[in-house]
Length: 249
Image (cartoon, rainbow, N blue to C red):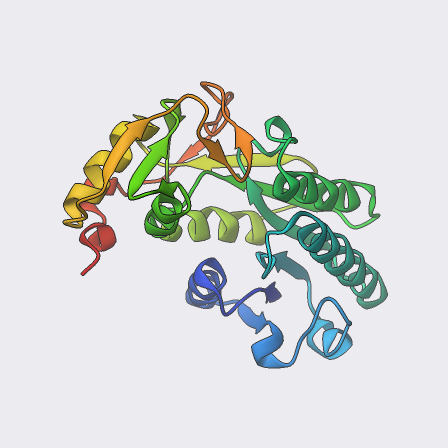
């Protein structure tokens, strides 16, 4: 099949293009770097010609409330309209575990809006919700740092390797439309503050990690299960302790 990966030059997209190619599919990376812009529609008709599946793993370049809402609403509307014209048979989108539980966050309100547009579209779809990626651990720590102290909520945390996310998204893309979501998470649960204490130590990062029940994630306060699957989930195979990138070298 021809499978177009929107955001195909990013972290998950590039892994996904490789994995789909290994399975014998014609995987095409679509991003501004390849001349495709889902905000303006530039390059969409050409790249979607003959495509059976479109996978959207693109993220907003800005996380400011109005900007992120504009990105996900505009890009999703533009993409779905182009897919309808091209008669694409399956739309797959990557989202985040707990999105519907984090609506106090502008970022997650935008993800909710994206999913609503997908569900209302006539195109059969699959949604893959993933937990936080191992690769994002450093930037999460940086975002949670105030005066040299990392403040993390003492809630459940189940991060996953980007390779395992790409594997799950690839399976969804190669399969029949689910018309629902599947969730993917890492093989182990941690306390968020304890995880970051261990993860930063492995990177020889001297910052202190403090448990703070009011610490926010994308401006949302977290409850015990905000960030982890509550029902059945696909569990990745890679443990954080075995992940090659954990030391930052």
